[in-house]
Length: 332
Ligand code: KG4
Ligand code: ZN
Image (cartoon, rainbow, N blue to C red; front, side, top):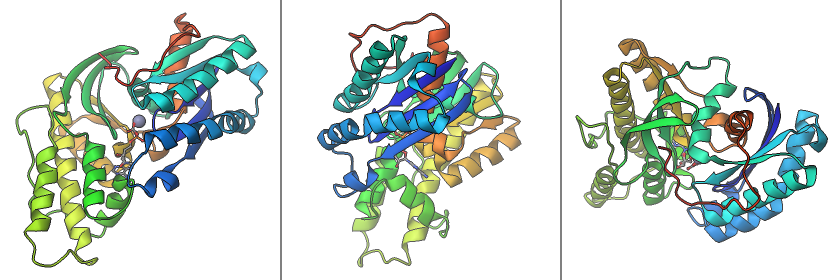
């Protein structure tokens, strides 16, 4: 089955064609980073307008890149939530209109389920059940995944998401947006043990990153001189290590506690080089197999939405053209 996926929950306008929920024929991502970068974060109103300009060209490009036309597509899947409602509505409305015009079924998909499902586009697919760590700009959640659509939440952040911890630190340090990418790059030249930032909520599978952010602020305030360019790598490497440490420790502990020796790491933060490295090391030591999609499938994309859509459509799910976007949509 050929499914056209559409994703517009935040600042990427994305469209992709996926065959049988496992083979990616195209994956088009029109990023708005350059526009929002000027404001230090995503401006929802601008995001909606940019999605409107980009959505049809992105869908056409996805068909062209896959070497197919609309008449080959058997179903359309679009992100219904969670995300920015104005942004979601653009992708959802375009998907509904295309499905109506082509007289093919349409389904709305949960963005977080999409992040988890991205792993099924890779060669090495995990068996169910597995543990999933979803780390993005809005989520830091550990799930037990028993099957498609069958999730049990094991742990989550009490305040900021891991991606927010990266983005807010980058803003405080005037490093630009999105923070995760800049910190990842700068940290490669730094010493992760240079500054002892706190690791919160030891002994629990829940997370908290607001204390870490405050600790960075206090570190900056406590200095007599501004941080120099030369000092930045050690500072961000230490800050990043505090985030990575808790993500790896708690996720592997959750897998051990549940006696599930498979962990999927996904969401934008899963493209972080140090996080990937530390998960692979930790997994090897603990006898837990680690599955991480390539970076392009960790950050927002529509191929992951098409994978979930394919599964829903194969199970007979059909959504009406009155389906609405939702800003919050817990997975379990
Ligand atoms: O999944 P995603 O693309 O969008 C959401 O659903 O939120 O995740 C975006 C988040 C941002 O906070 C961004 O800073 C972070 O992922 N991110 C990274 C990296 N690339 C993106 N964080 C750490 N290291 C990276 N290389
Ligand atoms: Zn996302």
